[in-house]
Amino acid sequence: MASYKIMKLSNNGEDFGYLTYGNDIFYGGGKKEDAVKLEPVKYPKLEGAYYYKVKGSKRYMDIRSNGQRIEGVEYNISLSMSTIVAWLHDSSGELQSVVGGKEMPNKVSRSMKDPKSQALYGNARGTHCKITIEDA
Figure 1 (cartoon, rainbow, N blue to C red):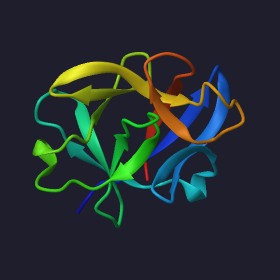
Figure 2 (figure 1 turned 135 degrees about the vertical axis):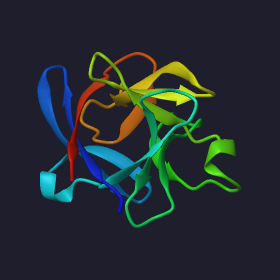
Figure 3 (figure 1 turned 90 degrees about the horizontal axis):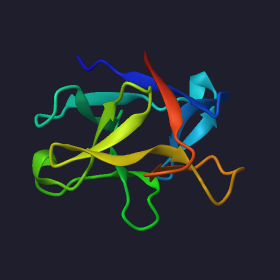
């Protein structure tokens, strides 16, 4: 049986609610009862890194190359051969992307252009979110 997780976010020291999911896009600012349940799937190329699968779907948390928005994406052939990023909860409490077994500079972040937006992005700089991973 899968062990699901939910994620609590903060940004610049302020509460930014829970990670939610709708229309294939990940958002912050949600209530705990609305938090998306994610199944961590071990990433074989880096200790402590995981793919995050949305419960009840075939979609994984990924950074889209066009616009860097964090979206739910399905793989075509196999997860390990896909371009879907894995995630590492780093020592600073941020969720960092992993590609090809290497830590990348992109982290879960708020929009740099629209401070009121709740959509999340995978930005290398800017407004990174601190994340607490909790059991669902």
